[in-house]
Picture (cartoon, rainbow, N blue to C red):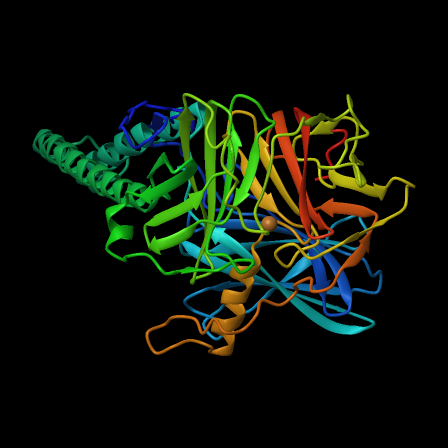
Length: 517
Ligand SMILES: [Cu+2]
């Protein structure tokens, strides 16, 4: 497994390009949409009921997803979960299964779902209680990301049983031809004994051939499976400077993608792509950009001024199938760029090179300017897999709530990255799934598609924030997947300006006493 920051500097220098820039191709093994963080978290309404959903997708496909549903209403008596594959739609989906109540935990239900194919699934959750029934859909990317290995003990046990089985089969054939033909107590005649030996001698190579064939078949199956494993799409990222303005170009190298073998990209939050450029060797430089796509395998965006250093690039895309993916790459800047130019950014793009607030060290984290404060409200000590940890208090100078304007249809955006780049997640107060993916499923279920299977994208995504709201608390449903040092950036818009606040969080190994699930 290559690290994200496997940079192979290939410096391009020309008279017209003011700076030399190294480009890199990353070869990291990462998950679709959710880099190193496969679990799906969702907070929202199923009709009249508030629900918190956590879904752990399987490592292999077909495989079993674990689904947890927590409902806020104590009258809820039944929770039904149902997996819908994007291509099959509701009509082609298996009937739902009843989730069972978790013993000793009021309002919590759990169940398992088979995900049979690779691609986007919508998990439909229907909740029934005193206020009637309500449903909600949570998109999940189903990808085979690994092979299940046998434990050494199981290998030894199965190997021993196999040897016994073969030995037993030969003994049985020997007996069937020899002793079993003779009444009990009688001697086995020499020619019968010889025939039995012959039979065993024929059976042994025949069994060997069968075993060999079986092993061949198994290897072929395993190879076929490995071919279906999800592989990240590799890209090349380069930075050039044209009349002082630095431009980033990310090119998809995958040949299947380049000839149009992947589903079209659909806008999410009204943008085709969300690109996050994060300095690798220091957490203080962060940019949220929206590249244009002059063709389906090229992403281009102006960059804000950036100091020299190594940068990671995470580009979130959603396919029209509802499948979310993140393109991961990195680049190196030998010197600072763009310092003299006015950043050519749109009002929906934001960048920050402020100090990152270490949680526990600077609990009074400040906003971009000091018109408001955003303070870590999660636990002082965070463990991996612990839920309800990404919480913040937002206040103005007088300690009151502030008015937050919609930023790309959301009250807030959060980006989580482990400092080695192996974990990356872009999420919102309603969870980790993109609005675009939800829209894709809704349109397909309604039959809002063209004859060639494309989505009719005239519809606006639902669940969008459209008007300014008063905000005091911000919470993002999430659990850090693994221990390590993480950076978290929170973005909100006030007075027409997008503010980015950075935090550094140390995540401890899961402590069984504290983990909620
Ligand atoms: Cu966002």
